[in-house]
Image (cartoon, rainbow, N blue to C red; front, top):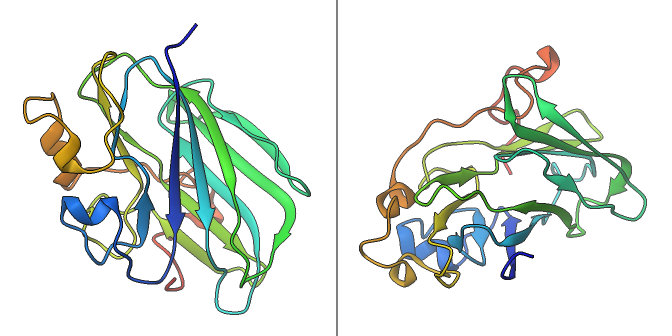
Length: 205
């Protein structure tokens, strides 16, 4: 039995916000997180929350590349969810929600369930792509936390640690702490799809 359930929310928005992420140097960031670090071995629910579509066009697909095997796409009313091993790395999972329609002006919620890896100091990245009815995409896949479209990220803490809401809450000697502010490589969750190989986003959130 895992020690706790850590609920982490990633809100994808086009509005500058003051969030815990701002504490790690991204005051203009469009990816808001409830936590920046969570304990190893804990059960986690990550909620990807698009806050808008592509202009007036609604969202019709959400795809997330979870950095762990056996991650699950939680069922969302009106949507079909699936989880498949990532073709480039079977330690990752591609989670997809299709068949639904999220109006452009309505926030949505697409939860991902997984167990946090035991590798303390590992940086977990959750690149996400929204596809809209008009064919445009909003791609949150940038490895620069100060970019316009940063991929959501989490640091794995020691199993006995408490979840950290801001960088200041992460112990100064925590392995990997500096990764929260570094530019890193990010796998594209739709890279295996030639239609979507032109990411980053074709329209600005």
